[in-house]
Image 1 (tube, rainbow, N blue to C red):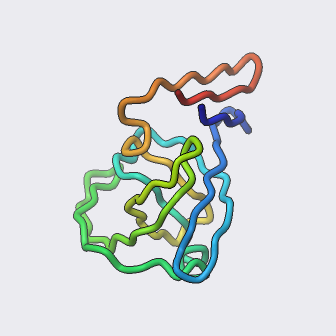
Image 2: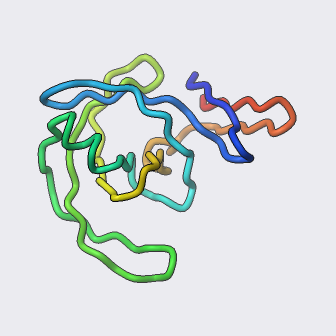
Length: 118
């Protein structure tokens, strides 16, 4: 089970990310509008030494289509090492997308501030 917390009415989980140069733990927002696996601030991706994997088409909330480079990384997800696709962004916020939530049950309890993914 992956556990997280509600901060300012938004659900967050910690994700340990491994690149070619280093590893880090990021606090990432659960974003059900983001269909890929993981989005990281570009500074973190550079520091980790992520490897360019592919170029993918993404659709923004306003319907705009963009071509974005996609990088590969490994993450510790529920105690298992898993390879994921990572989109880098100029935003300061890391995102966990529905690619990592597929097949999982997500419970966000706003009364207690607990987030559980199982």
